[in-house]
Image (cartoon, rainbow, N blue to C red):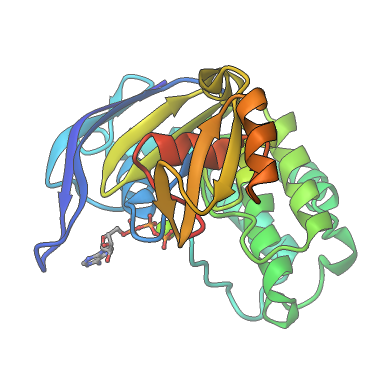
Length: 277
Ligand SMILES: Nc1ncnc2c1ncn2[C@@H]1O[C@H](COP(=O)(O)OP(=O)(O)OP(=O)(O)O)[C@@H](O)[C@H]1O
Ligand SMILES: [Mg+2]
């Protein structure tokens, strides 16, 4: 359970990345979505004790990320958006050294490392220099570290960016198997829908929408998305409206394109704009 209250982050140059944000997270997997620069990474870095907030608080399982930072680090694992591999160390070294540093007994490290590496299909390259792996494989090494960690709360900042479709499936299924709380950022709508129990959209450092995907889609009450020469929303040059199926049939005759509503439509109608911008 994570409780964020009136969180503010103002960087040294005056940029306000998180703007009086309050949020309770308690679902097993939560996806945080938002445009480039929305404040996702800043929020994740504060929650994972890597960045000091300007004001406000974050409490994780009863522990304050500023006052109890050391205790918080014992129960979390975090993968940053930009990861740097230790050049000559192998994937196996990465995972086992990480578990060692976290204090897992030596007798358990071998097995836990193997399990995580196999799950992400990295067992075959476990003894290669990590620097010689592809960018996507390097990302998966870090996901393996997080899933092997046994942490109560795991933060992953865009773990699947740049991964091929099969690798993305591997990452999702390994995350779904974990029993801890997972907070993940992504730009992929499909992923948010498949993976999470709850989505949170942030924009300009504030929460715009929070809820379950099905519950949020239910707000449209059977309406569909119509794109054409006129519409209630102008997004990326597209005019968009949400209309009943009966009205949609008439609009098709006038050249409109009709689509099923998706998560993106929730964001558009909530004022968050399009994530595809
Ligand atoms: N070190 C920094 N100094 C000053 N401003 C920063 C710094 N880091 C981030 N920002 C600003 O804070 C805002 C939020 O950035 P952040 O990296 O949290 O966004 P994001 O949602 O993770 O974006 P992306 O989807 O591109 O990863 C942006 O306006 C960014 O320019
Ligand atoms: Mg980011």
